[in-house]
Length: 224
Image (cartoon, rainbow, N blue to C red; front, side, top):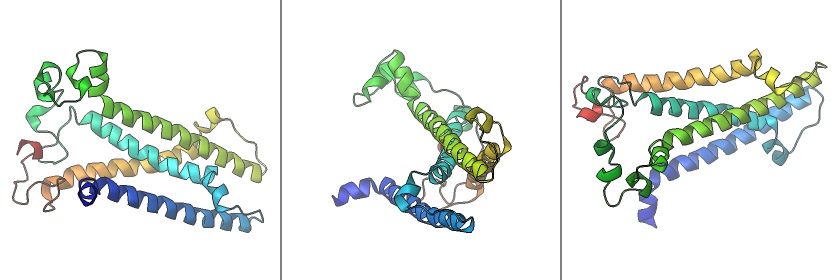
């Protein structure tokens, strides 16, 4: 058991702090929501009711979709785009799609390769793009969930203030939705861009996200 925990420790760690953070958000969100309800002389709600509310769901999905967009784009653009000296980049001479030999697919696949990697039909095409496909699907699903949650929340506020509710297609064209969306997108793009540049010059001994401490700045990580 201890060996299994050690081998899965990175996933277990981030799963644990994700669940703790999500719980913290739900508790803080409920208190903030109920405080706003009291301020407007409206009824408060219970914790279980808040968990299925558009307020909580919209806020959660709002962050999820931006995170998955970030990784979707990063997976896609790093096939062709490079950054000299960065750990987030392939070697400069490796830009573009790999050969079958480099990708270890088809007749170049080792005996213990995943079964679909050994094939030469649509199943291999799906499998060799499966990471991008999965991330893209999660992004669009969470973006849709975010838009529906925030749409419901927006209409609740409209009704509370005696204004007319709007349809979903109308909501995703108004400033409220895109203001909330771009707030998340710009922060994610800034974070990944900063990591790309910082990893050229800065180091963390022992981390796979860093080059060796003594590596020269202009050495692209995967070429070392």
